[in-house]
Image (cartoon, rainbow, N blue to C red; front, side, top):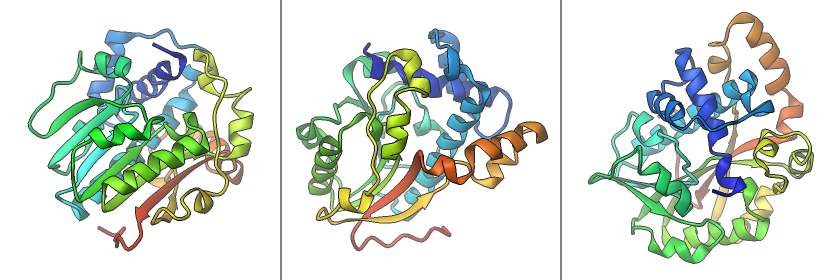
Length: 270
């Protein structure tokens, strides 16, 4: 397993740790898989603050996926760069077909913990190779979850990946976290992924420019740390977490962007 693949254990540890506290995220699968894998993470990767952050990020992605499934009941769900995440079990809304995608080494481990069914499959896929998108199932509409993936793709690779998705699916709903260019540069020195050997990350400042000409639009920017989730922390932890992870500086490093195909109507009150 290469260094990028090893980063999947960081959010797995965080979700497992927080789930055991019965706050933010209910994820018994993360608890079970972490106990079985026990990958030796260290340093910043074991920070309780990062664990809170990973759990909140996952919860925001979960809630968004549920909203999209309520809006697009027949959509195909693609979780690309899924790692050992159990979002397919955490979401509340039913889905027609869900495909969890990652590199072959990751999918091989994943199959030790998840079984396929009529509406759930796993598929090896390298997001840096747009040609592989052609092997994904056909669908008019695709809900695409890109959590913890974009920062490992160059701008050219990410654009090529979005181009391929846009050609494949008429209606696209995408949620993706990104580093800014400043955040990517800073991450060379202070990022938990350094603890597993990753030193090269990519950032985006101009999302509109990135998707220009693709028939995609920026719907809105989401918060990784909604007040309702922050309020689930203990008072002392809550105060420090707000200081470190909810201010303007954090947004200068890390952002969460929702994209949709042009003309797609989304009601965020659903």
